[in-house]
Image (cartoon, rainbow, N blue to C red; front, top):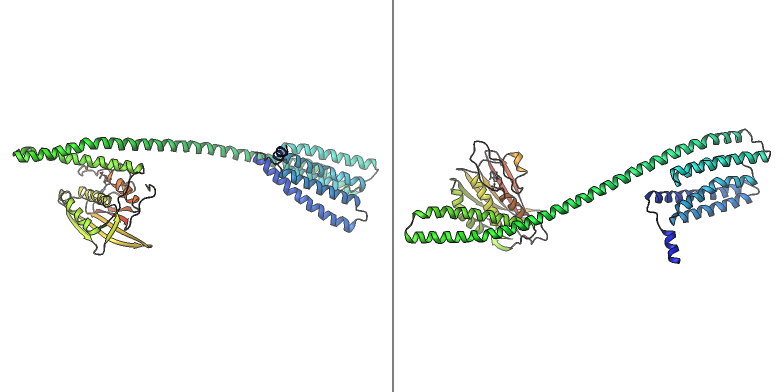
Length: 450
Ligand code: ADP
């Protein structure tokens, strides 16, 4: 029972406006109590018989104190009407003992101002009606006492009669306007919440579709890789047998099968890697290796590729390049991607692979630059270069270049997983430089950084 009562008294109204009015009641009541205390001082100084006034002040402090407690307990309406009732009736009670005609009309105007803050907008009219009634009572009391108000008191009475409806109207309009604004704000918030909810749902749907796509790609790539590996193995075997049996005429055809198969395998591997990255499942095999040795081995393996378009390959490895701790296979994969692009988009030019150490903000980096003197990339295409399946449109009157637009995106993803990144600088018809910046000591990724 006690618990129920406590809950009933402390329950907060769900309406935000209600709570605001509650705060207004508290602030105004505190102000009224302060005024009442000031009044005590004034009364004690100037009034010879202050008994009634002091009683009224004690009553005021009790009523406004109760209003504060009620408002804090969530009973805002009760608190508001209590304080209003006192503001409306108090002056007349005071007038019964000492007729101070001037204070009553002024207090009524004050009551309406308070009403505009603590009651709902339409209720201001109720307060006005009570105030006008109070005014009528004042006049009737004065007549009953055969009291003739002096000039100032008459002016105050007439002014109050004009001011009361005006103050009520202004209070009503401003309170309604505030309520309208609040309602509009509430509607807007509701709409935004609705949109946010829809967006979250769309995001969830897109993410689950993406996961399904990644799973499908991973599965398909795996299924395609197995027969393709068998095709490549048997092509090698057939080439060996053709050589043994002197059937040289088959060798060139078998060579075509093998190179096409390898190309296809490379593509499938890229798709598989990409789906692993998207699913956050790409693991790094970290090891310590000598950068210069890795570069020399790499250059030997890409020589045939570079020579295809009669390009010349230059290695520029800084003598203090040293060792690094990273996934060597992935670093090689990125560099081969860059070198194969440089070879593809350059003819009879120079391709340079450089490696140099770099120290910034206490971080130790190894930076590889792969430069070519090829066709270059138009400036407007550079921002989209690292997007998946994005290819730069082949320039008119230029040979058509094949490719799936996967290599750069994949390289950038892998590089980021290792804590580095790839940047590019290019001038159309002059050449391109890709800079691959990797930490000298790569850390195992905590989460996917794509
Ligand atoms: P692709 O398999 O099409 O080469 P990439 O992701 O490796 O896919 O490259 C994306 C695009 O970037 C290519 O289509 C090409 O237009 C452009 N590109 C990449 N490297 C170079 C380069 N060295 N010179 C000129 N263009 C390049």
